[in-house]
Image 1 (cartoon, rainbow, N blue to C red):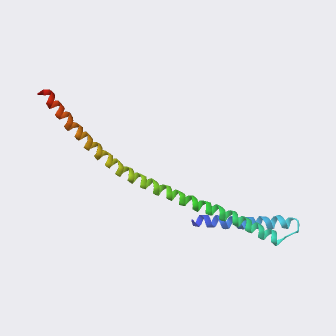
Image 2: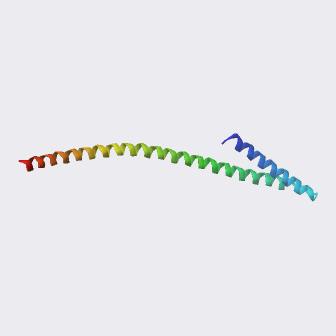
Image 3: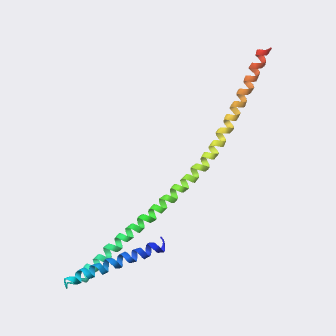
Length: 105
């Protein structure tokens, strides 16, 4: 969580409280329970958004780790397959050479 996120959260909460106070004072009916409720509502919404962002960052990190592991494993797999294919082609080349020698005799 960055400082920017905290500043925006504070700004959202303060603006909700100020807006509610101003709106209530227009009708000369300032109720601090309503103002406190708007404070809690805004604070919970901002907290929810921040927690979603943190979860998304965690998921992105897990996906990047999985990509790295897959890339490393695929490189090792490619090397093993390449060595096996090389061994089989060498075996087939030897067999073909034997067959060619028999044909020329």
